[in-house]
Image 1: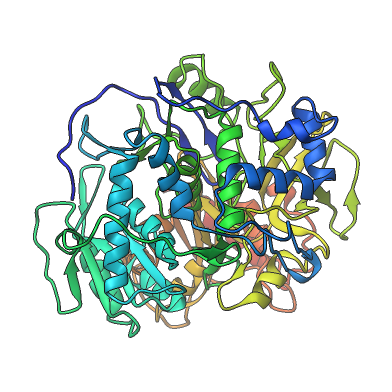
Image 2: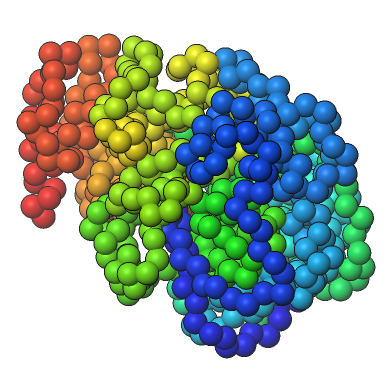
Length: 631
């Protein structure tokens, strides 16, 4: 099923990560007509122009979303109600009564009109090689996988875990789950066996889809072996389907099936399951401020509509464009802007298997310097750089420079403008609304939108406590933001203990939990710090148990090995500072803000230290940090 590759013309891809994105599109010929900008707006009285249309989308939300949903999605049964939402209770429901199938919206309706249009361009890790799949071919592949899953007992409401690199069969597997009514749980293929097992258990998956080996940056990763290790601790797993990315054989057990061989037994027609708008489409695990990842739940109609709409208008996508997103499918960006958004719009989407290093690694934040370089060198001065803000929780882009009025300014390093239907607000530390410009506060959303997550799998109370209790009546993003004099938004960083390493979101508590398992460690504190390449790096403070006599260099290697094994390599600390004690309040709480200031070398901003139980601990941390940097 892995087709032979062939060379093709050069393209310029889009680069995405959580919170930032840069869009470059190549126009290509197409046999299908492109749609006019927001055709639904013709029925919105007084909504002429982008700004007026945004105002209408916020003040007349039900009319706006109803019109867009009817126009953009193909329904099996029309919806009865546009929304039933109460942010104070964490209740979000959209388009209830409606029935549809996501895979039909992403594949069948385009096959009916443009069957030979290219759906996927798989840019393989091997330089200069690619494989193209038309919408007809992708539909046939999806149907084969769907029939295979059904034959092996996967039914509506089940959850299939997918542990694969970015490739056509991974996309087909996601769409096959959607076609038969099963949810999918895509796990980033860089996660360790323990991290994978935790997500399989929480999702209660009986089926896993993987590959024999992954290939990225010229390196082979043993994904099947990782799955084997993971499922030993997952009693729910009954079957594992293994695709062959390389020609290297791997050990197969009684529960393992060769995916391509099994697919050849299946028909290319698979009856789609009618799904309710609020049925689960997928789970996606993201880090939180506690040690346990959150399985965020996204549902059918609202998510697909929002992914399609943001893809179309933030990146000004038109029929015939080739759209590239280099994010891994294991993250929300890969879900929304590699798979669902582009395919719902009938687009040609690039699957990038390798790693973006052109010509050298570029840091995570698109600051002014990086913006100018990207615009000048990569885009050759002719492509806008679109700096976006959004999260796994939001489902799609919420703040971005585009869409905007023609010739509207783009300010480097700023997300700027709220998307249609999005109403951002800033709150102060006392929970009061900040109404003036040129001010900073906690970024919240004042009203719901279709793409937002519905709950945390098996833990709705945690969902409410995390996103709706901090500011009752609002959705709390966990990020801080600055609103300029012009009303533009700039994200200033996380307000909780979550860091972003090269686009990989990880909770500091998860790393601390692993470090603290070491028998030599009494306690630890992990923080993020600014990193020129990765955006944020990982800095760990470690206190050893009394009487422990170990070499710090050897223990550092051991701790990094533990973090790599239990979470992933990217979560390993860049620096480990051993300390006799950590600065704490009199109640025993670690003063993380002090640790952050020390690592940032901002000692003039340590703030009030009157609550420190022992001020000498702060000085010890400062001296230890200086010693570590001098090595």
